[in-house]
Length: 157
Ligand SMILES: [Zn+2]
Image (tube, rainbow, N blue to C red; front, side):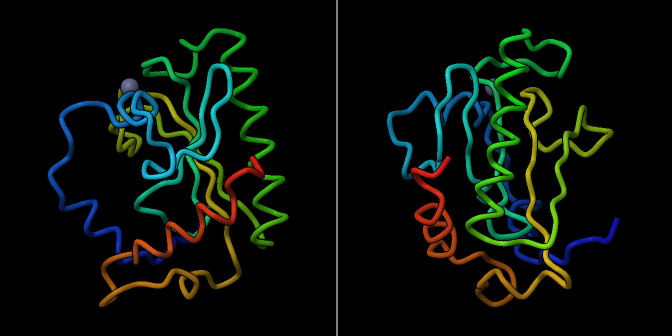
């Protein structure tokens, strides 16, 4: 797999990670716009990744704090992948990418950043990538870029 050059993610890599679970905390707050929550299903929600590899980098997660795929109930799993599928369809319409990486990292050894709360990454890809994310001094995604992505997708998922 070709790696994405995403230098702004150094901020995420270096930062002090929050003690709690953001995939529990964010949907628990009543502040979807600021938390970049794009959609709330019955069992799962969609959130914009604040440290994206590319514009439109989404995460789908169950509300329930479960660490692994096989711990999802049938209903949770079914809705989870329906939402993943719908996300791909909407991202195609809105961003017209050349492809996608859709990924689940189970466990720290596999590279999971939030290892205790199962989630699926959806990363739109373009030929060549890297020139689409407006960055500041090469290391920080402009907050406006995330807000802009949020506005483009809000209501469509
Ligand atoms: Zn959690």
